[in-house]
Structures are given as structure tokens and as C-alpha cells.
Image (cartoon, rainbow, N blue to C red):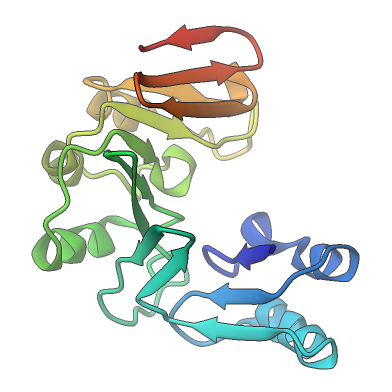
Length: 201
């Protein structure tokens, strides 16, 4: 079973969603909270035509015995803050995927949820300084921070100020390390990249 989750509706997150739906078996699509933009509306037309179910602003998704918790707070005027922020506990390890959520949503998450001691943080908004506020990072205390970012990107991400805030964690960046794979087992985990292997067992 294949599920497509759209962290939020910007092109860099879901620009190829229609191609995926057209070329792979997709059973469900999950949208973030908030109004749909043009990309999302176009995708919904394709989903309706192909009779693929879609949902928005959900609280939880069960995959086998695991639960993905969507940390919804409220609807924002910002597409970035309406990103799906997803919390997952897997084999006693805690994952937090921030999408492009910014500082305002980070503050609301701290107010609404008790999230701390994250093992694997997917850093918000590619390491932009609009996300990863010091108060938030100190509260969730990530052990490993993963930044999805293009090499020599025009925005200058990740920002040095964000790297400094994350400096108490081990930082992995796709522009430096290539693809990043986390392998879990009963003894611990291994973080594997294109260029090296980090054995954390």
C-alpha cells in the first residue's frame, strides 16, 4: 500500500505529486490544514478523477502498529505554518518532521504538546532562520538534526545562526552528505549517508 503525504503545498514539497499519482498506485493522499492553493487544487482534480481518497487536517495516521501524530495547532495565514508537522515513535526512538513550519507554529506546538528529547529531527524549512528558534530546539533537545537542502541554493540555507542553534546535535545535510538513511534495530541505529557511515550502535 502506498500513501502520499503532502507536508504542505509549495512546489518544492509537492510539485511532482500529480506525476506520482499518475505513475504509482496511490490509495490515499493527506493534505495539511488550511485552504488549498493552485497546486493542491489541481492535484485534487486528478485524485477525484482517479477516485483516490484524500484527507486534510487529520490528527493521526496508523501504519501497521505505528502511529503518526499530526501536531495540529490552528490554521495560519502562512502556507509554511500550515505545514504538517508529524511526530512518530518507532522502536522507542522519537522522530519529528517539521515541514516548513516557522517560529509561530513552533511556539504553539510547545504550548499544546509535550514533545522533548527527539532522537531524529527533520529540521524545519531547510535550515531557514524563519524556523528552528532557540527556545524550540532547546525544548525538544534533538540528538540528530537532518537538513534537506540543495547544494549552493539561492537562499543560502541552512543559515549559520540555525546551525549554531542545532550545534548540540549531530547535524546531517543533504547538500554535504547526500541521501541520508536511518536504520533501526533492537541494538540501536545506524545513520548511513552517500559519503560515509555513522555507526551509533
